[in-house]
Length: 413
Ligand code: SF4
Ligand code: SF4
Image 1: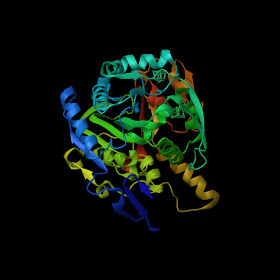
Image 2: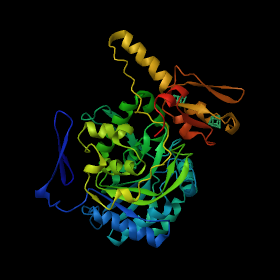
Image 3: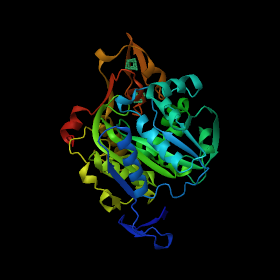
Image 4: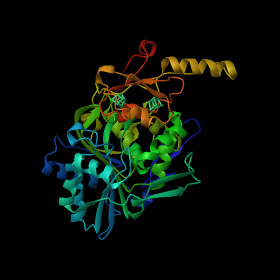
Protein backbone atom coordinates (compact mmCIF):
# COMPACT_ATOMS: atom_id res chain seq x y z
CA UNK A 1 0.00 0.00 0.00
CA UNK A 2 1.59 3.24 -1.10
CA UNK A 3 0.83 6.67 0.25
CA UNK A 4 3.07 9.28 -1.32
CA UNK A 5 6.60 8.51 -0.22
CA UNK A 6 5.56 5.89 2.32
CA UNK A 7 4.26 2.37 2.43
CA UNK A 8 1.95 0.79 4.98
CA UNK A 9 1.43 -2.90 5.37
CA UNK A 10 -1.28 -4.17 7.67
CA UNK A 11 -1.18 -7.66 9.08
CA UNK A 12 -4.26 -9.76 9.71
CA UNK A 13 -4.34 -8.90 13.40
CA UNK A 14 -4.55 -5.22 12.58
CA UNK A 15 -0.97 -4.36 13.54
CA UNK A 16 0.41 -1.70 11.24
CA UNK A 17 3.96 -1.92 9.96
CA UNK A 18 5.41 1.28 8.62
CA UNK A 19 8.16 1.26 6.00
CA UNK A 20 9.61 4.33 4.39
CA UNK A 21 9.98 4.08 0.61
CA UNK A 22 13.71 4.39 0.20
CA UNK A 23 13.52 4.41 -3.61
CA UNK A 24 11.34 7.52 -3.86
CA UNK A 25 13.80 9.64 -1.93
CA UNK A 26 11.47 10.08 1.03
CA UNK A 27 14.19 9.62 3.61
CA UNK A 28 14.08 12.32 6.27
CA UNK A 29 10.86 13.87 5.00
CA UNK A 30 7.97 14.19 7.41
CA UNK A 31 4.50 12.86 6.64
CA UNK A 32 2.80 15.65 8.59
CA UNK A 33 4.07 18.99 9.83
CA UNK A 34 2.75 21.11 12.65
CA UNK A 35 4.01 24.67 13.04
CA UNK A 36 3.22 27.32 15.64
CA UNK A 37 1.26 30.35 14.50
CA UNK A 38 -0.26 32.28 17.37
CA UNK A 39 -2.63 34.57 15.52
CA UNK A 40 -3.76 35.75 12.10
CA UNK A 41 -1.03 38.34 11.66
CA UNK A 42 -0.39 38.15 7.90
CA UNK A 43 3.43 38.04 8.09
CA UNK A 44 3.48 35.40 10.80
CA UNK A 45 0.91 33.29 8.97
CA UNK A 46 2.88 33.33 5.75
CA UNK A 47 6.12 32.35 7.49
CA UNK A 48 4.45 29.54 9.42
CA UNK A 49 2.49 28.27 6.43
CA UNK A 50 5.53 28.16 4.18
CA UNK A 51 7.46 26.36 6.88
CA UNK A 52 4.64 23.80 7.36
CA UNK A 53 4.36 23.15 3.63
CA UNK A 54 8.09 22.89 3.02
CA UNK A 55 8.57 20.51 5.96
CA UNK A 56 6.54 17.92 4.03
CA UNK A 57 7.84 19.02 0.62
CA UNK A 58 4.22 19.84 -0.09
CA UNK A 59 4.83 21.76 -3.30
CA UNK A 60 7.27 19.28 -4.78
CA UNK A 61 4.87 18.42 -7.60
CA UNK A 62 3.76 22.02 -8.11
CA UNK A 63 5.38 23.46 -11.25
CA UNK A 64 5.38 27.03 -12.62
CA UNK A 65 2.39 27.73 -14.84
CA UNK A 66 0.15 25.22 -13.08
CA UNK A 67 -3.46 25.98 -12.20
CA UNK A 68 -3.81 25.55 -8.44
CA UNK A 69 -7.31 24.90 -7.15
CA UNK A 70 -7.81 25.50 -3.44
CA UNK A 71 -10.77 23.66 -1.93
CA UNK A 72 -11.39 25.82 1.13
CA UNK A 73 -13.91 25.10 3.87
CA UNK A 74 -16.66 27.66 3.22
CA UNK A 75 -19.42 25.69 4.87
CA UNK A 76 -21.73 28.65 5.39
CA UNK A 77 -21.95 32.44 5.32
CA UNK A 78 -20.20 32.95 8.65
CA UNK A 79 -17.58 35.66 9.26
CA UNK A 80 -14.00 34.48 9.83
CA UNK A 81 -14.19 35.27 13.56
CA UNK A 82 -16.74 32.47 13.91
CA UNK A 83 -14.00 29.89 13.20
CA UNK A 84 -16.31 27.86 10.94
CA UNK A 85 -14.43 28.51 7.70
CA UNK A 86 -10.84 28.59 6.48
CA UNK A 87 -9.56 32.00 7.57
CA UNK A 88 -9.01 34.47 4.67
CA UNK A 89 -5.56 35.43 5.99
CA UNK A 90 -4.26 31.86 5.62
CA UNK A 91 -5.84 31.60 2.16
CA UNK A 92 -4.13 34.87 1.17
CA UNK A 93 -0.80 33.60 2.51
CA UNK A 94 -1.17 30.45 0.45
CA UNK A 95 -1.94 32.53 -2.65
CA UNK A 96 1.25 34.55 -2.08
CA UNK A 97 3.31 31.38 -1.72
CA UNK A 98 1.81 29.86 -4.87
CA UNK A 99 2.32 33.10 -6.84
CA UNK A 100 5.96 33.29 -5.76
CA UNK A 101 6.40 29.72 -7.03
CA UNK A 102 5.02 30.63 -10.43
CA UNK A 103 1.35 29.67 -10.29
CA UNK A 104 -0.38 30.10 -13.66
CA UNK A 105 -3.74 30.57 -11.97
CA UNK A 106 -5.09 30.17 -8.43
CA UNK A 107 -8.77 29.33 -7.98
CA UNK A 108 -10.53 29.31 -4.60
CA UNK A 109 -13.77 27.38 -4.37
CA UNK A 110 -16.22 25.37 -2.32
CA UNK A 111 -19.84 24.30 -2.40
CA UNK A 112 -21.39 25.39 0.89
CA UNK A 113 -24.55 23.83 2.28
CA UNK A 114 -27.45 25.29 0.26
CA UNK A 115 -27.82 26.35 -3.34
CA UNK A 116 -24.83 26.02 -5.63
CA UNK A 117 -25.18 29.17 -7.71
CA UNK A 118 -23.62 32.57 -8.12
CA UNK A 119 -25.96 34.41 -5.74
CA UNK A 120 -25.75 31.93 -2.86
CA UNK A 121 -22.04 31.15 -3.09
CA UNK A 122 -21.28 34.83 -3.82
CA UNK A 123 -22.82 35.75 -0.47
CA UNK A 124 -20.68 33.11 1.24
CA UNK A 125 -17.56 34.57 -0.44
CA UNK A 126 -18.57 38.04 0.83
CA UNK A 127 -19.29 37.08 4.41
CA UNK A 128 -16.31 34.76 4.85
CA UNK A 129 -13.89 37.41 3.55
CA UNK A 130 -12.77 35.41 0.52
CA UNK A 131 -12.58 38.50 -1.69
CA UNK A 132 -9.34 39.32 0.12
CA UNK A 133 -7.77 36.47 -1.86
CA UNK A 134 -8.42 38.39 -5.10
CA UNK A 135 -5.90 41.00 -3.90
CA UNK A 136 -3.37 38.16 -3.66
CA UNK A 137 -3.70 36.91 -7.22
CA UNK A 138 -6.54 34.40 -6.83
CA UNK A 139 -9.90 34.17 -8.55
CA UNK A 140 -13.00 32.95 -6.78
CA UNK A 141 -14.66 30.07 -8.58
CA UNK A 142 -17.68 31.12 -10.67
CA UNK A 143 -18.15 27.84 -12.52
CA UNK A 144 -21.21 26.34 -10.86
CA UNK A 145 -21.41 23.32 -13.13
CA UNK A 146 -21.86 19.76 -11.89
CA UNK A 147 -20.57 16.49 -13.31
CA UNK A 148 -21.30 12.85 -12.79
CA UNK A 149 -18.44 10.54 -11.81
CA UNK A 150 -18.28 6.78 -12.15
CA UNK A 151 -16.02 5.28 -9.51
CA UNK A 152 -16.19 1.47 -9.58
CA UNK A 153 -13.19 1.11 -7.23
CA UNK A 154 -15.04 2.98 -4.48
CA UNK A 155 -15.94 1.25 -1.23
CA UNK A 156 -19.49 2.65 -1.34
CA UNK A 157 -19.63 5.70 -3.65
CA UNK A 158 -19.70 3.99 -7.03
CA UNK A 159 -21.17 7.02 -8.78
CA UNK A 160 -21.80 10.55 -7.65
CA UNK A 161 -22.16 14.18 -8.71
CA UNK A 162 -19.46 16.72 -8.01
CA UNK A 163 -18.59 20.37 -8.60
CA UNK A 164 -16.92 20.48 -12.00
CA UNK A 165 -14.48 23.33 -11.24
CA UNK A 166 -12.33 20.72 -9.45
CA UNK A 167 -11.58 19.14 -12.83
CA UNK A 168 -9.55 22.20 -13.80
CA UNK A 169 -6.92 21.59 -11.13
CA UNK A 170 -3.36 20.80 -12.12
CA UNK A 171 -2.65 20.88 -8.41
CA UNK A 172 -5.43 20.45 -5.84
CA UNK A 173 -5.07 21.82 -2.32
CA UNK A 174 -7.47 20.72 0.42
CA UNK A 175 -7.39 23.68 2.83
CA UNK A 176 -9.53 22.80 5.81
CA UNK A 177 -10.44 24.24 9.19
CA UNK A 178 -10.13 22.12 12.32
CA UNK A 179 -13.54 21.77 13.97
CA UNK A 180 -15.69 19.56 16.10
CA UNK A 181 -18.45 17.95 14.06
CA UNK A 182 -21.87 16.73 15.14
CA UNK A 183 -21.95 13.64 12.96
CA UNK A 184 -18.30 12.78 12.29
CA UNK A 185 -16.75 13.92 15.57
CA UNK A 186 -14.16 15.99 13.74
CA UNK A 187 -14.06 18.04 10.55
CA UNK A 188 -10.66 18.50 8.99
CA UNK A 189 -9.04 17.50 5.68
CA UNK A 190 -10.97 14.31 4.84
CA UNK A 191 -14.39 15.75 5.64
CA UNK A 192 -13.58 18.96 3.77
CA UNK A 193 -13.77 17.08 0.47
CA UNK A 194 -17.50 16.46 1.08
CA UNK A 195 -17.72 20.02 -0.23
CA UNK A 196 -17.06 18.52 -3.67
CA UNK A 197 -20.69 17.43 -3.62
CA UNK A 198 -22.97 20.25 -4.85
CA UNK A 199 -24.66 21.84 -1.82
CA UNK A 200 -28.25 20.89 -2.47
CA UNK A 201 -27.31 17.23 -3.07
CA UNK A 202 -25.53 16.86 0.27
CA UNK A 203 -28.65 15.87 2.26
CA UNK A 204 -29.33 13.12 -0.32
CA UNK A 205 -25.93 11.61 0.40
CA UNK A 206 -26.72 11.69 4.10
CA UNK A 207 -29.93 9.82 3.40
CA UNK A 208 -28.20 7.33 1.15
CA UNK A 209 -25.55 6.56 3.81
CA UNK A 210 -27.43 6.86 7.11
CA UNK A 211 -24.96 4.69 9.04
CA UNK A 212 -22.06 6.79 10.25
CA UNK A 213 -19.51 4.18 9.19
CA UNK A 214 -20.88 4.13 5.62
CA UNK A 215 -21.01 7.91 5.48
CA UNK A 216 -17.37 7.95 6.57
CA UNK A 217 -16.48 5.40 3.88
CA UNK A 218 -18.21 7.64 1.34
CA UNK A 219 -16.08 10.60 2.49
CA UNK A 220 -12.92 8.52 2.10
CA UNK A 221 -14.07 7.52 -1.39
CA UNK A 222 -14.32 11.21 -2.27
CA UNK A 223 -10.84 11.86 -0.90
CA UNK A 224 -9.40 8.95 -2.83
CA UNK A 225 -11.20 9.99 -6.01
CA UNK A 226 -9.89 13.56 -5.92
CA UNK A 227 -6.61 12.74 -4.19
CA UNK A 228 -5.62 16.29 -3.16
CA UNK A 229 -1.94 16.94 -3.86
CA UNK A 230 -1.57 18.82 -0.60
CA UNK A 231 -3.69 19.13 2.52
CA UNK A 232 -3.36 22.07 4.89
CA UNK A 233 -5.25 22.71 8.11
CA UNK A 234 -6.02 26.01 9.75
CA UNK A 235 -5.94 25.21 13.47
CA UNK A 236 -4.71 28.64 14.55
CA UNK A 237 -8.18 29.12 15.97
CA UNK A 238 -10.16 25.89 15.79
CA UNK A 239 -13.81 25.31 16.69
CA UNK A 240 -14.97 23.30 19.68
CA UNK A 241 -18.42 22.51 21.06
CA UNK A 242 -21.45 22.74 18.79
CA UNK A 243 -19.47 22.37 15.52
CA UNK A 244 -19.09 22.51 12.63
CA UNK A 245 -20.89 25.85 12.25
CA UNK A 246 -22.08 27.11 15.64
CA UNK A 247 -19.37 26.02 18.01
CA UNK A 248 -16.96 28.15 19.99
CA UNK A 249 -13.61 29.40 18.67
CA UNK A 250 -10.70 27.74 20.47
CA UNK A 251 -7.15 28.90 19.94
CA UNK A 252 -4.71 26.07 19.26
CA UNK A 253 -2.06 28.16 17.51
CA UNK A 254 -1.17 25.55 14.88
CA UNK A 255 -0.94 25.10 11.14
CA UNK A 256 -0.64 21.56 9.78
CA UNK A 257 0.31 20.26 6.35
CA UNK A 258 0.62 16.85 4.74
CA UNK A 259 0.55 15.24 1.30
CA UNK A 260 -2.23 13.03 2.71
CA UNK A 261 -5.57 14.27 4.13
CA UNK A 262 -5.81 11.08 6.20
CA UNK A 263 -2.42 11.42 7.85
CA UNK A 264 -3.12 15.08 8.50
CA UNK A 265 -6.42 14.19 10.17
CA UNK A 266 -4.83 11.59 12.40
CA UNK A 267 -2.41 14.25 13.65
CA UNK A 268 -5.11 16.93 13.91
CA UNK A 269 -7.36 14.62 15.94
CA UNK A 270 -4.60 14.30 18.50
CA UNK A 271 -4.73 18.08 19.06
CA UNK A 272 -8.41 17.70 20.02
CA UNK A 273 -7.72 14.72 22.28
CA UNK A 274 -9.28 12.28 19.80
CA UNK A 275 -7.99 9.03 18.36
CA UNK A 276 -8.99 7.10 15.28
CA UNK A 277 -11.52 5.19 17.42
CA UNK A 278 -13.41 8.44 18.02
CA UNK A 279 -13.59 9.59 14.39
CA UNK A 280 -15.43 7.47 11.79
CA UNK A 281 -13.44 8.93 8.85
CA UNK A 282 -10.20 7.87 10.56
CA UNK A 283 -11.63 4.39 11.14
CA UNK A 284 -12.57 4.24 7.46
CA UNK A 285 -9.10 5.41 6.40
CA UNK A 286 -7.52 2.81 8.70
CA UNK A 287 -9.72 0.09 7.14
CA UNK A 288 -8.02 0.92 3.83
CA UNK A 289 -4.51 1.03 5.26
CA UNK A 290 -4.29 4.75 4.59
CA UNK A 291 -3.20 5.58 8.12
CA UNK A 292 -1.40 3.82 10.94
CA UNK A 293 -3.25 2.98 14.14
CA UNK A 294 -2.23 6.07 16.08
CA UNK A 295 -0.71 9.52 15.69
CA UNK A 296 2.30 8.24 17.64
CA UNK A 297 3.30 6.21 14.57
CA UNK A 298 3.41 9.23 12.28
CA UNK A 299 6.63 10.82 11.14
CA UNK A 300 5.96 14.39 12.23
CA UNK A 301 7.88 17.61 11.79
CA UNK A 302 7.11 19.52 14.98
CA UNK A 303 5.52 18.24 18.16
CA UNK A 304 1.80 17.55 18.43
CA UNK A 305 2.17 17.59 22.22
CA UNK A 306 3.03 21.29 22.05
CA UNK A 307 -0.47 22.01 20.69
CA UNK A 308 -2.72 19.22 22.00
CA UNK A 309 -5.21 20.28 24.66
CA UNK A 310 -6.74 17.94 27.21
CA UNK A 311 -9.97 19.89 27.67
CA UNK A 312 -11.06 20.40 24.06
CA UNK A 313 -14.87 20.42 24.08
CA UNK A 314 -15.72 17.71 21.60
CA UNK A 315 -19.27 17.02 20.50
CA UNK A 316 -20.99 13.96 21.88
CA UNK A 317 -18.81 10.91 21.51
CA UNK A 318 -20.10 8.62 18.77
CA UNK A 319 -17.93 5.60 18.94
CA UNK A 320 -17.23 5.00 22.58
CA UNK A 321 -20.56 3.29 23.20
CA UNK A 322 -20.64 -0.43 22.59
CA UNK A 323 -23.88 -1.37 20.89
CA UNK A 324 -23.38 -5.12 20.79
CA UNK A 325 -25.73 -6.99 23.07
CA UNK A 326 -23.65 -10.13 22.65
CA UNK A 327 -26.60 -11.84 20.98
CA UNK A 328 -27.04 -12.59 17.33
CA UNK A 329 -30.12 -13.02 15.11
CA UNK A 330 -33.39 -11.14 15.43
CA UNK A 331 -33.16 -10.73 19.23
CA UNK A 332 -29.63 -9.33 18.89
CA UNK A 333 -30.76 -6.85 16.23
CA UNK A 334 -33.73 -5.73 18.34
CA UNK A 335 -31.54 -5.27 21.42
CA UNK A 336 -28.94 -3.45 19.33
CA UNK A 337 -31.63 -1.13 18.04
CA UNK A 338 -32.91 -0.45 21.58
CA UNK A 339 -29.39 0.24 22.85
CA UNK A 340 -28.71 2.49 19.90
CA UNK A 341 -31.83 4.58 20.52
CA UNK A 342 -31.19 4.77 24.24
CA UNK A 343 -27.51 5.68 24.03
CA UNK A 344 -26.80 7.54 20.78
CA UNK A 345 -26.25 11.28 20.59
CA UNK A 346 -29.14 13.15 19.02
CA UNK A 347 -30.08 16.69 17.99
CA UNK A 348 -31.96 18.45 20.79
CA UNK A 349 -33.74 21.80 20.46
CA UNK A 350 -33.09 24.76 22.73
CA UNK A 351 -36.53 26.35 22.19
CA UNK A 352 -35.53 29.82 23.39
CA UNK A 353 -32.84 30.07 20.69
CA UNK A 354 -35.14 28.94 17.86
CA UNK A 355 -36.66 31.64 15.66
CA UNK A 356 -38.89 29.27 13.67
CA UNK A 357 -37.13 29.87 10.33
CA UNK A 358 -37.85 26.25 9.16
CA UNK A 359 -34.35 25.74 7.76
CA UNK A 360 -34.00 22.47 9.70
CA UNK A 361 -37.39 21.31 8.39
CA UNK A 362 -36.32 22.04 4.80
CA UNK A 363 -32.88 20.45 5.03
CA UNK A 364 -33.73 17.23 6.92
CA UNK A 365 -32.99 14.43 4.42
CA UNK A 366 -35.09 11.89 6.35
CA UNK A 367 -38.15 14.20 6.56
CA UNK A 368 -38.01 13.55 10.29
CA UNK A 369 -38.93 17.13 11.26
CA UNK A 370 -42.36 18.70 11.42
CA UNK A 371 -42.96 22.29 12.49
CA UNK A 372 -45.38 22.70 15.38
CA UNK A 373 -46.17 26.12 16.82
CA UNK A 374 -43.21 27.45 14.79
CA UNK A 375 -40.77 25.03 16.46
CA UNK A 376 -39.28 21.86 14.96
CA UNK A 377 -40.38 18.52 16.39
CA UNK A 378 -38.14 15.55 15.55
CA UNK A 379 -39.55 12.08 14.94
CA UNK A 380 -36.85 10.01 16.63
CA UNK A 381 -37.81 6.85 14.72
CA UNK A 382 -37.18 8.52 11.35
CA UNK A 383 -34.12 10.51 12.38
CA UNK A 384 -30.90 9.12 10.87
CA UNK A 385 -28.69 11.32 13.10
CA UNK A 386 -27.02 13.06 10.20
CA UNK A 387 -27.02 16.33 12.21
CA UNK A 388 -27.71 18.43 9.09
CA UNK A 389 -30.33 20.29 11.16
CA UNK A 390 -27.73 21.06 13.85
CA UNK A 391 -25.14 22.03 11.25
CA UNK A 392 -27.34 24.42 9.32
CA UNK A 393 -29.54 25.97 12.00
CA UNK A 394 -28.63 29.65 11.64
CA UNK A 395 -29.18 30.27 15.34
CA UNK A 396 -27.36 27.25 16.76
CA UNK A 397 -30.64 26.26 18.43
CA UNK A 398 -30.05 22.53 17.84
CA UNK A 399 -27.32 20.90 19.90
CA UNK A 400 -25.88 17.41 19.82
CA UNK A 401 -26.74 15.77 23.13
CA UNK A 402 -26.25 12.33 24.57
CA UNK A 403 -29.18 10.82 26.46
CA UNK A 404 -28.77 10.88 30.25
CA UNK A 405 -28.28 7.12 30.45
CA UNK A 406 -25.42 7.29 27.94
CA UNK A 407 -23.73 10.03 29.97
CA UNK A 408 -23.91 7.80 33.05
CA UNK A 409 -22.59 4.68 31.29
CA UNK A 410 -19.80 6.41 29.38
CA UNK A 411 -19.02 9.85 30.81
CA UNK A 412 -17.56 12.47 28.47
CA UNK A 413 -13.82 12.33 28.10
S1 SF4 B 1 -33.26 25.98 11.80
FE1 SF4 B 1 -32.92 26.51 13.94
S2 SF4 B 1 -33.93 28.49 14.23
FE2 SF4 B 1 -34.71 27.61 12.31
S3 SF4 B 1 -36.59 26.49 12.94
FE3 SF4 B 1 -34.91 25.02 12.98
S4 SF4 B 1 -34.18 25.08 15.10
FE4 SF4 B 1 -35.42 26.90 14.80
S1 SF4 C 1 -33.75 15.46 12.39
FE1 SF4 C 1 -31.74 16.35 12.03
S2 SF4 C 1 -30.34 14.69 12.53
FE2 SF4 C 1 -32.34 13.76 12.26
S3 SF4 C 1 -32.38 13.15 10.11
FE3 SF4 C 1 -33.28 15.19 10.22
S4 SF4 C 1 -31.57 16.58 9.82
FE4 SF4 C 1 -30.70 14.58 10.31
